Image 1 (cartoon, rainbow, N blue to C red):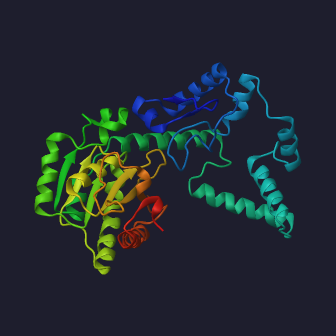
Image 2 (cartoon, rainbow, N blue to C red):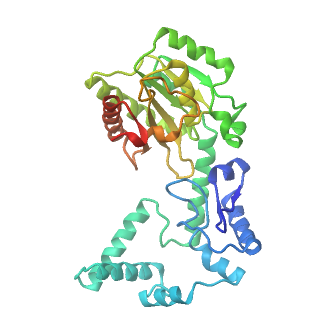
Image 3 (cartoon, rainbow, N blue to C red):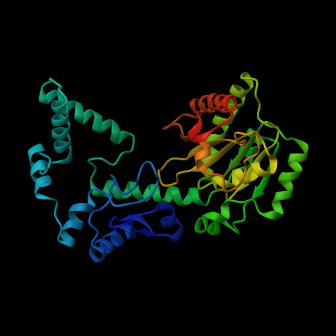
Length: 354
C-alpha cells in the first residue's frame, strides 16, 4: 500500500508483504510514483528497510536516479555544502571518512585527520558486521532487502509452537480474535482487537477459577516467530524476578491468536486483573524476531476498573525491542519486573507513570 502523506512517499512493509509486493517491484513502483506524483521530497533509509519500524521505503541510493528521472536536483546551497565536505565524489568509504573527520573536527577533536579517517573506517566496518547497509554495493543491498522481505513474510504467517507454550506456561488457554484468518487479520487490523464471542466463554471460565492481581497474555501479533524465539529466555527470569519481589504470575496464561495489543485489553476486561502483562510478537521487516511487553494498570484514580478494548494506549507502558541483538531477554525481564513494581506502587501506568 503506497502512502502519500502530504507530498512524502513511503511504503508500509506489512501491507507490502500482505499484498505480495517484492522489493524489486517496490523499487519500480517507487520510480513510477515519483515520476507521476512529483513529490516535493522523498523519505529515505539505508537499503530500503527501516531498521526501527520494519517497513520498506525509499533508499538513499535511489535518490540520484529518481532526481534524474524527475528532473529534480538538490538545492544549490546543499550542493555547495556537500562539496565543501568532500562527499560528492569518490568511493563511499572515502566520503564517509571525510564526513566523519569534518564532524569530529567541528566538535573540537584535535587528533590528526588520518587518525580520524581510520577511526571512521573501523566504525563503518563494525556497523557493516552488524548488518547495516552502509557503503555497500547495489547487489549486496538488494540481496539484503530480499532476505529481510522473505524473513518478514515467514514471520507474518507463522504460528506459536506448542512446545514453546508447554515449556513456558504449561497451564494456558488459547483463544482467537474476530479475524477470520491470517489474511483477514493483516488486512483489517480492527479484527484482531477483540476476542471472538465463541472463545470468550473460555476466558470467563478462567476468571471463575483463578482471578489474580496480575494477568499474563501471550499473543502471536505480527510475528509469532518472535514468541517462539524469545519467550523461553524471557519468561523464566521474569517469573523469578517477580517471585523475588513477592509477586507471581497467574497459574494460567491466556494465549491469543491473530492478536493486536487491544486484544489484551479485552481479555483484561473479562478477567479484571489489577495489572496486565501482554507479551506480543512485533516488527516483521527488521530481519529480527523481536517481542514487546505491554504493561497496563487497570484501575482509575477512584479504584474502579477501566478495562476496555478501546483503552487509550497512553495508559500503557511498553518494553520493546526484546531480542539478543537489541534488549536481551534477561535484561528485559529485570526491567519488566522493576516496572511492574513501580506500577503497582504508584497505581498507574503509561504516560502518568513516574
